[in-house]
Amino acid sequence: MHYSKTILFLSSLFLFCACADKESKMNKDAIVSVEGHTLTLGDLQKVIPDGISPEDSTLLADNYIQSWATDIILYENAQRNVQNQAEIDKMVGEYRKSLVINSYQQRLMQERLQAPTEEEVNSFYHEHQQEFLLNDFVVKGLLIKIPNSAPKQDQLKKQMRKMDNAAIEFIEKYSVQYAVSYDYFIDNWVYYTELLKTIPVNATDVNQFLSQTKFYENKDSAYTYMLSITDYKVLGGVAPFDMVQDKATAMLFNLRKMGYIRQFAQMLYDDALRTEKIKFNTSKQD
Image (cartoon, rainbow, N blue to C red):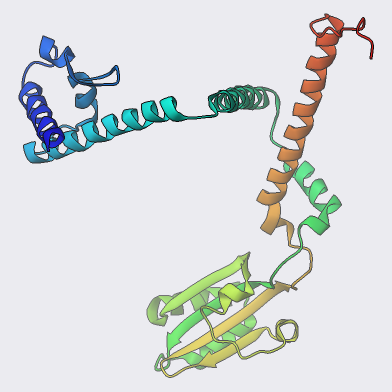
């Protein structure tokens, strides 16, 4: 109860002082202290956004002060009661060392390593094709969904079977007028399982279906679905380069980074040996 009253008092003090000149002496005074740690009005002002209501300012100040004080109380209490302080200090030191090393390595790589060229990535892709096997069938093509009552469906089917430039132009114009949805994926690969979320396909043997189907049509009670397949790749086969180019680039670049880090670390070690920064006690016998 007393703590809540203290918080309310401090929040009221904050609201009163916030209306005054920000450079006033009051803004620099401590408003609460816990275990030797001090929270100033200036600290509070940094977390209270401008333009909010006095009520919201009070609530935000109350919550911040309580959270700030609780964190300090918990930390100081843990400091007094923790049994493995030396182990914690060691872990903190190791973590800090790791952060410093990682930051240094990242800067070095940004300065000295260049991203692989497309030609290099392509060579890596062909040399490591077992790393790029498909876990699903993938297809290229075009899919349109229209109401069952849509006109000119025979013309649409004819163009969906042809799939030349003139046919695609007709399909696109038709889709603007009549389609519920229209998906053009002739230039990019789509997973077969994702395609099934858009069109119902009655096929138990997917490999056979894709190898024998260039045009497919299905209906339900409200819509007609038409699919034109221009290309496909089978489950377990090697993924097309354009589908995994980003992945291959990242893999190759990561391999180069690891190689560079190992080489740089070895160079530092060898230099330290040469300049006698590393000294072995050769006089000590087993």
